[in-house]
Image (spheres, rainbow, N blue to C red):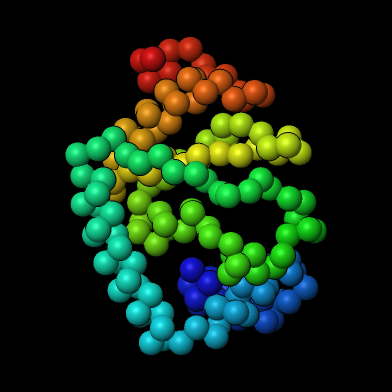
Amino acid sequence: MMREVADLYADEVRGHYSRFGEMFRNRVLLGEKITDRHYRMALAQCEDFAGQLEATLSGTGGMLLPAYPVGPAPLAAVDKFYFLARPNLNAIANCAGMPTLSLPVLRDAARRPLGVQLMAARGTESGLLTVGERLERLLAYPHQIPFAEGRNGH
């Protein structure tokens, strides 16, 4: 992903460096270091993985996964390269190109939201949103905005 961001924004970041936040600039500059060979290898691995995941999801309504292993922190406290040291479970769907929906389900000891993600097969976004809506109603996460009655016939 960093390579793709670098391909799109490196010239602009280099030309207008101060207009961008430090975390974004670092990702762009790091992405420039990813060679064409390594990028092609990563794309091939993602496509392989997508095929395996598609087979796993076939005939199911989807998969329920943790969204992220820890709660959010103030942006100033976030390590610029946290994604290199800690597993990013959202990257699974990004790599495979699968639709994913994240929902808050509880709060950690610091009252920060923790969530789950629902992942489904490609082309099943409508069903994923329906499952997500039902799960959101069941979980009744505090402070959520209630759904308007009668939405989608529910």
